[in-house]
Amino acid sequence: MEKELRIGLIGPGHIANKMASTIKRLPGFCNYAVASRSKDKAEAFKEKYGFQKAYYSYEDMLKDENVDMVYISTPHSVHLEQMELCLKYKKPVLCEKALTTSLKDTQSIYKKFEEAGVFISEALWTSFMPSRKYIQELLYTKKKIGNIKSMTAKFMVPLMHKERVTSRALGGGVLMDIGIYPVSFVFRTLGFDYESYDVNNIVYKDGVDIKEDLTFNYKNGAKGICKVDGTSKLSLTVKIEGDKGKMNIDMVNCPNLITTKNKYGILTSCKWTKPKYGGFEYELIASKKAIQEGKLECEEWTHQNSIAFAKIIEDLFNSDKAQQ
Image (cartoon, rainbow, N blue to C red; front, side):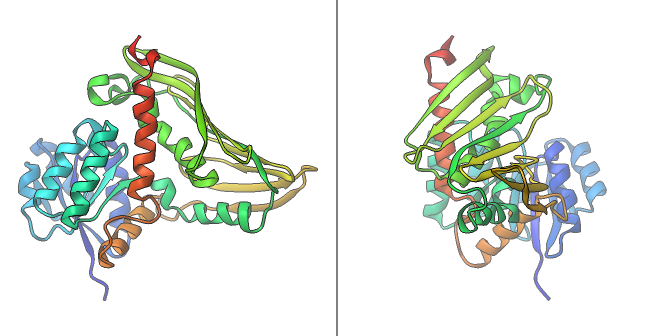
């Protein structure tokens, strides 16, 4: 019988509920320990999801030799200190995006884990889903829509009531919070080797970005357009145009329905790709596999992939408009 990977969870908040629910149902994984500085939150979370232990100190949980991997789901402004604490106890880490609040910190923490020989991955669930390989197959192996001319990926959702988004002190801004979905989708589809990119229609409020459009320009003429907006109605679609047809994807962060049509508008493929356990299972499975194989990262979303996105954030925050 396969040994379960015992998860220690830091930060029993909104996203942690989804992860804990997934772990509870997923064979080969175990909700082992939860840590919160609030005793009430830790105990309530333990009972809700069947954790074996509740800790009221992060360090106390990390001292537990039975914790095989730590999942961090606190605000990204405190990720760095928590990952460094995990490294102190040589604990493999799966950390929610954004990994840190700066390019320098992202590069630094990866280097520290790599030098220590300890696994770490940013939990960008979309890149781990089987739908990613299916999309690449349709576009590049089967050439269902011919040569790609452009793609538009949107993540538009009302978020102005979320302090993690509106507070610069917490590492706020919509690009860091939700922009990673459309940007990474473009990167994983068109490649990381873009020639240039432009930022348009950018709006700042209280020192953080609340909406922007990014266009990535590629040598072959293709354009990857990302629309990020924390003030609008929900829109999460991806549309890819080729010289022989189009591809439509219903959700940029968790594709459920993927269709292609030829240039005459006739349906050429249609696939329902909804994850069995909600979508978080794939990053867990990939992390466990990497740890068992002695790897320090997941091939689905590498350290360099993560650093590439962190650079986009850095460029944006250092722009002239960000200082206004």
